[in-house]
Length: 445
Image (tube, rainbow, N blue to C red; front, side, top):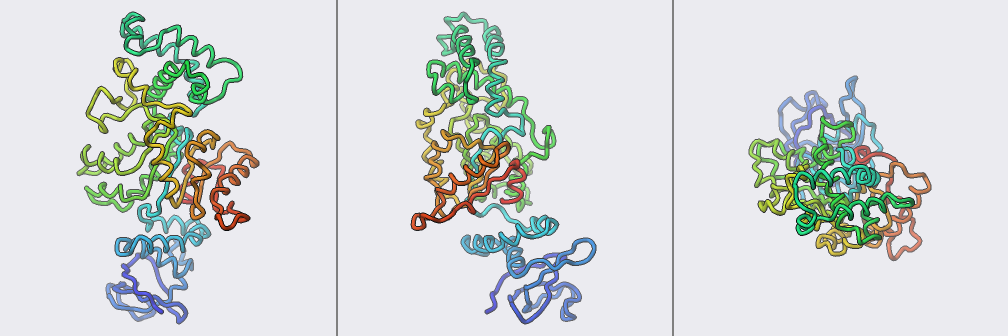
């Protein structure tokens, strides 16, 4: 039985007729010379076989794909005319075809991809912010050991207060800072500063101040897009391009929140929010208020908190720090701002945590980007218990050994196994790759 599909002309595509599989194309301007039955610009109802689609490749035409290919192109152009479930089903049907196709075809087909329809959650570790100049866990530790004493000393000298006046504001004493560094820089200490603080709670306040000063410094030094040291690792721009590909009008930035995405990050920095806010201002009609409205509709949850809201997110200047602010200019706010930061086990008091777990359980796809898969971080999110058999999981594992990668794949697959099929091998639902975030998203998003 022929399906009826609303379809518009796709330049450079020829459909060859036969009697095998037919789909009725309504209002399709047929390519010139099409079987001698159509004239350029004519619109007529035509039955065509979709078993073969030819795409220009520069030297002729290559026969690539079949009925799902053209259906996918229809989906990309006429997505708003179909129910969401049907759109997702069509995309699922074509997924294998896309991944098995030649690279030139895959690149050509990208043009017709719409915004992200599947409920997709991105779980971000320190490696996700690293390409923009933010520190990994080990780099944060080293930076604190090398620079905290100087930064804090300069901070105190700039605001010529007595130690009694500083401690009244909530700042630690210089001797507390020295004691923290002597223990933190001791032998056999773990890489993660927040894990260290969970085991040494007496240093929590001074340790959080050290984190805040370091992250503020790195925010100030961070770079995006073509200003990056390695622009090829810019997954923010790749994802943003995918989310806004259909946004061609001067006010079409208002469609951003239609993307079915959410972000759960273990990072304290605000680089993702800062990037989205700046990027959306490339639209002529964008205003700070309207851009904020769009970003607010996208869940960006910081498991361990963040430095503060950004100025465009809150008008109360006593609660916010600008992206990369000079700490000396925020002297009076820092002691209260460090209360926004959590360390391991403290995160249980984070009001956003339960929502993050629910979002993971309701997702169709989960991407781990720059994530270290530390036990304590997986447990915080309830993984693998929160995973469902219908989900697909993708993740970067740069620096992992093959054994570590397989062990993690097996652990995540345990959560994807159907409860009525205890012997099911669910490892095929977990794709862990030794690559960066850009490569992973280009292959699977």
